[in-house]
Image 1 (cartoon, rainbow, N blue to C red):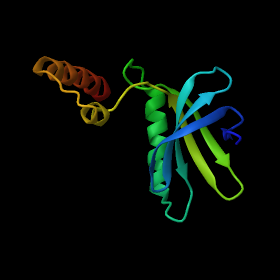
Image 2 (spheres, one colour):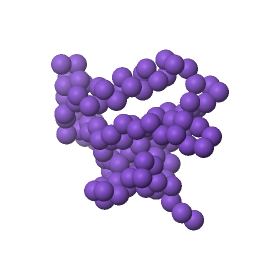
Image 3 (cartoon, helix red, strand yellow):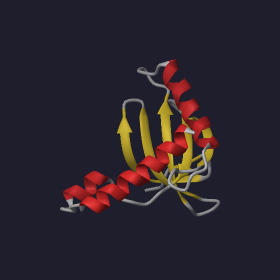
Length: 130
């Protein structure tokens, strides 16, 4: 089976998530060999123009951010395929587990770990607010 390559550059490895009209993929940038995340918005029967406006705003916002705990903007694509058109936002991939994955694996957190996590999240929120 041949891997799907978007924009002749991003080799799709697998799907990370999916919602109506959207999907999130993990891929490899064939130019840099770095792992990336690609968020796609599809122009389908359930498409609304407001979705595209919000998607473009997310892209512009991410482009303006510079924080070590927030993925970096890398690229924005318009992809024309045989049966559809979609837009894609490419950002850096951050390896890690979700809180849900930790909890399902039986991980527990001490009070000090929860406080440290909350402090880290608040620092990110302060940065975004500024």
